[in-house]
Amino acid sequence: MGSFLAFPLAKPPDIFDLPDAALIDADKDDVYAECNSINVTLCKVTHRQNMRAKKEAAMFYEYRCHWSEVVEKLKEKYPQWTSKDILNLRNQFEVFVRDQGYLLHFTTFNEMLDVFQDTTSPEQRRAMFESVDTRQYNAINFEEYLQLMNNINIGTPVPRPPGIEQDRDEIMNLVSDLSEASTFSQICYGLF
Image 1: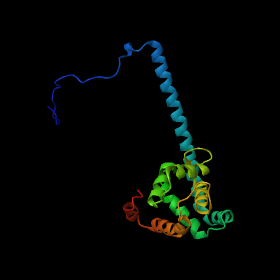
Image 2: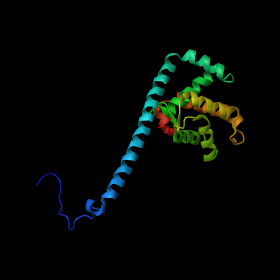
Image 3: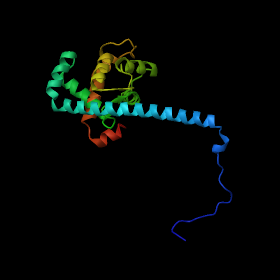
Image 4: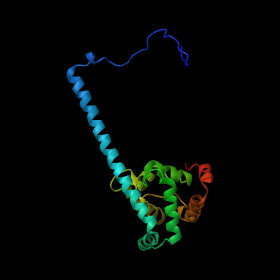
């Protein structure tokens, strides 16, 4: 009898697939060709994203190994930031992209802005993101992220909500506190 209960079917299940005999041979070829085309495109995109994620993870590892040199180069590029600001931005970036191959995807960027209670519209967010995502991966690396934060803090063609300059220090402090918080606290904030 076995360990599972078994009941006989009262009626056979409904089948919604057309049998192969119902498809004309020309239709079969079109369907198979279209499925193959979609599969090839999906595989190319996935492979491209995986290769970039591996490259960015290796680059981020190098950043960590040679952090003091990286900071000096970044301070030359962004003189308005201190070493601590750059470290806070790195920690913020790591919190949001740890499981994504060190790439910040647009959906995660939206979630990040929601955590900071940013009131920009979806169109403004998309424009800000696309201004640094020049290769159109729908994901940005750490250097592009720094450029995005620079654009948000200094000036961008996308209108910002009023008061963003005054709230910058408060936002940076919140990010710093979140990055230094325990894993449990980060879970409580909904970062995982």
